[in-house]
Image (cartoon, rainbow, N blue to C red; front, side, top):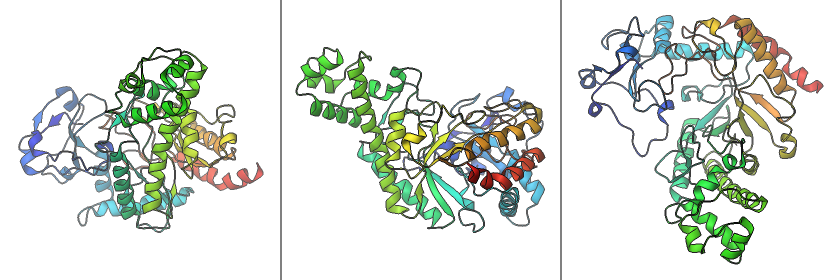
Length: 451
């Protein structure tokens, strides 16, 4: 963000029927009426930039607007993309946005030259019509459906899949993706959602946070809570039996439905919480899978992209019933045998949806989530990570996040300013990374075949 803002009435606002979160939206065109209301809101932020163009300047078309931020110095405001401005500088503009078409061609040329076999998640729909390299599509289910909470909702609350509105929105999302993909055989599959806060593994309380928090809710307002009450009434003949099992003192099923607060007292509770959690997760995956099968029957459901910090085994197992591939975002130095031994029990194709390595030697202030000493070390660590993926028979691949570096001043949605690109903000490839990719891809199939 630049430190400038506009009168809110001049900016197109989000709508209830939007299909894309703010951090993945298309560019917002800033009208002349909005430009006239431009005003400084953060001198500190504005002073970070030695130069910004006027809106009327040749590069003024690279301004954008963020209506909502997850974190960072400003919650909303004007944005300028130096990456897209540099693309126009580099490739020229003979007609409106011709530089983007040239960039698309160069990007695919690079991917093929470097040995990559597909474009991963977050692929711009501009590439969906390409017939040169396979790609993965993606979508989000957002809308005015009810939500539940794990008690630690990093990116936001989780959907209540028992709310009929969730199913409606899943169908709308799948239909929109299908229109973009247009039954292309170059689309391998579709990822839906990303890094949801299903629960954390540090304690049983954090693992079953969705259950514990939902139990406190009134079933009249929470469809998931109403389902939990239904399941417990089906298991226990009366409330006394549940109290005996749980070590609680709930007066009646009506009180239970109204909302009860409990900790985890014994193994019987853990077993029941697992049942409730599984019921919740299965409903989510069942609805998503059915929506994709209806509108994209020829493409795989690639799962929900579990974060390393949010993959309770009840949810992971539930996903295997409906997803064709289970996806994990895993930011570490590599895959260790002990961490991933559960894959043998799941016996399901798996994919790494995100990983990266970065270094401050690039000039950016943050290396990313996994640190290297310099670009050569970064390339070495990239190869070593990928070799652990290749050597695991349950993994079908891994997607690097992301193609280009973050802005040095931080991306607008949450301030990330990582050196995680294969190319810099000037669209210049990092030579050691390119060399490592070519070496890795030349030998990955023979390496896998030897295992």
